[in-house]
Length: 417
Image 1: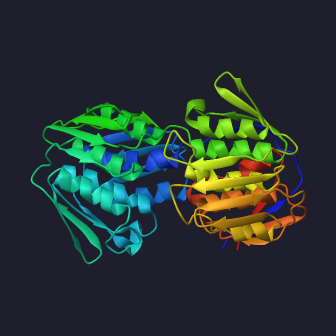
Image 2 (image 1 turned 60 degrees about the vertical axis):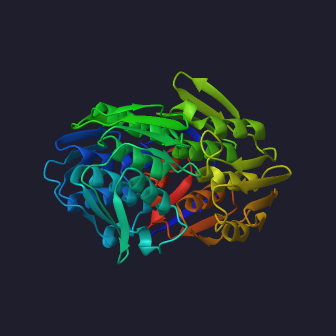
Image 3 (image 1 turned 45 degrees about the vertical axis):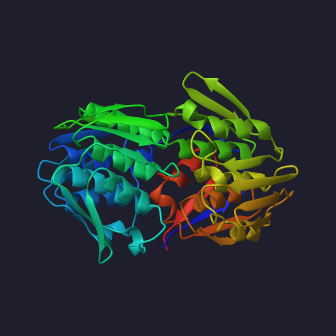
């Protein structure tokens, strides 16, 4: 099992280009199932999750070629409708094939992600959306089984905004008969990216970016070409990397408007952030100010940046408070940060971070994707060597992060386990 070794100390300087967004690429890849033909996707990140989705599409009959950040997906022979447990268990985002399969074939059999039990889980929102559109949905042996003659337009109202369920509902409603309205829809940029791709395929969608999305169903969609938007979470992570090392980094290939909440908090901590055309230059203070952060659905502060900001807070001047309103238990990285000398305590969904003057390298274990990034960021400033194990998590969402950081002057390397 691979490990990443980080020697703390160097100030990051230089230029880094942000890759395509995983969280935009996956639902767009799933949406290609709606229309037979050859779809060409540019700026596709080279990530484990993208490869897993490619394998899943292959099982469903697609011919997928991923080369040099371009994806070619031929869906003309996609006649299968079952997404098996063996692939779905590897990635919760696999549930996003439910809507496209149901809309195209009139039936879908998709494993519950990770074999989770039926009950009050996020997958319920996906099921609700398909039922609202007229499908007969039931659970059979760990699979969501859905059938319909043709989906019918409906009003779909979510109790809370769900990115994945909004994406599934948009895709399915695009081929439904009649008009659909998604109320309390998610507003993330990835929703807008999917809507733009569906429009390129011939869908009639308005209101994306607001909490009410309107879809006028059409009889047929067509293969399309599209460019994946930049990854706003990767961009935020490299902004923190510049700030935490007191560095000077030019971040290219981004959309600044997607990172507004992160930029605001970094400036509040004392970072200097300036626009250089379409790019951002981030200069970090030697010791940032403590801040309070509350995660919220977009355009609020993203929960996917919570762990990385906690890394920055460990050396801030004062005490910071993080409240995660999205996930109540997303603090598995706290014990590992404390192993590096951080002073972090938690109470349910609240973390209190008291800044310290020095961190020390140690062996730590990544518990999830964003925790991996947080531990690497902390290792950049810890005295001595930090060894991060279980880094297969980070390969799901960051393309060659150790190479990009090394290109900015970090002393970092991957060791094969």
